[in-house]
Length: 477
Image (cartoon, rainbow, N blue to C red; front, top):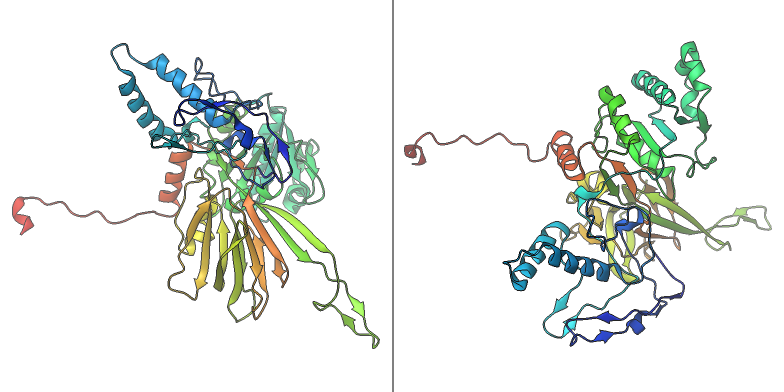
């Protein structure tokens, strides 16, 4: 979450074992005006770590923090350690075992000490919860009543599955939302048997109707692009998304349409694993030029015209692509990280992607593939005119800014998940941070198995003919 205004926080005594065990008041943290960033899975699911007596329960209601989440987790670990310690095990043995177990599940301990005196400064405004992917489960506060069905446009092969699914949902007394242009298909309008079902639908139009507070979950029929389109419809909180593989690649669509009835029923009952796919919050600021007419009647729209600043915001699931567009010259853009110029990209362009987007355009440009649960932002150059410009991964909490260099020979172009392509002129800038609103994608099995299954089935990752084994020792020579 990004905070730019002054925020008051109650000073809570914190007992630091690395500082003589005394209570250290958090007076230095009571008031902060510096812009800070935080990525936390608690934006969608919050778990009370102090409830160690009922570990199987995973409450999803948000609670106010009196202490920092790191302190809460540490208190919970201490209680659990005392609760699970065998009678014959010493405190040192238990501490060593518990630290190893904690690292194997959730990374390094959030309470970090360095030697006998040094410790990490506790900052309640910049906290990152690292959650075991297997523990991310879907639950409903109330039974779901409405569903948004998104179908790939202009694909005749999806009409029959779409009709059958909609009939099934209406029979379950679900309120079905469908985009108006989907129902404008002549084949659907000509089907008289489907006309009675259409009358029960609620329709909407993209960029005109707001359905963010009306839909309980989403069902996508199509390929990966259908999921990207569903993400673009929600600029804030996104309902859980269930994607059926009816497209070309299907890396993000794990479900098979043949068994949709049992699978959709499981989702309605709240029996499913989810993966939180982080998005990028992108703000494009541009100089809105005002056209004027000179004395000769010529319309002037050059850079000297005065205009106001215009800002547009986007939520991006895969990547932001800045490229040279139709020009033959190299793109020349400056890349800033937290206000510091880190490099100038000279090449065909640059890709800023999420871990989900690491297997898309960034993967084709030579970037590494990153699991969606890893909090990170990837920066990948497109055909850089430099042998040393390698793709890099930066923390998810940073703020990136892309601007056209002063000495650039031409403008550049930007697109967001392959859509809304527009020109970048001198004076424009693009600010990119990790969004607080991820896409909760419903898993077929779990976040880990689904991802490796997609790597194997869709991208044929590490496919190679097996090496023959040696039949005898004599074959060695």
